[in-house]
Amino acid sequence: MSEADPFAEVLDRVDRFLASDGEGCKATAQAEAFVADGELVLAAWLAAKGEQPTDETIEGFRLLALHRQGARGDASFNACRETCREIIYLRNVITLYDDDTAECRHQLRLQAMVLRHLALFVGGKLVEAGLGDFCCSAKAVRNAAPADTLSGAKAARH
Image (cartoon, rainbow, N blue to C red):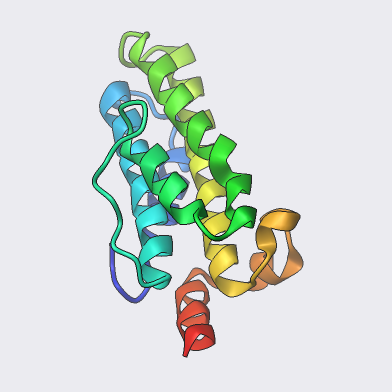
């Protein structure tokens, strides 16, 4: 993930996956990659706040520990707690299927959409304080380019 635009690579991977039919992919590996992308999104949030992202886990997942760390001192960040849990839940569902079944591809598409939601929410939080009070569908977020999210947050801190 690049320093200049921490969300563009994640969103690009999600968009490429959603544009494909997902056929032939290694579903479990893809589900794990989406969890790792969620970790990258939350690590970018913590880095923008000047914090060192944790390597700890909660219930066996770093994504949940990163969310807990990110929510300390910012109650509005709790709005994405269930989004993080949904990414993990879908990963768990996907591991129950054999790779490359129609149902497995469906679950991967859902996981990709939830990951996109997380990336847009966190990117929006970097643009506009208090975003967690309503959602990532805010006009200011929809109109901002992903690169603007991190640079706007850095400018606001200085």
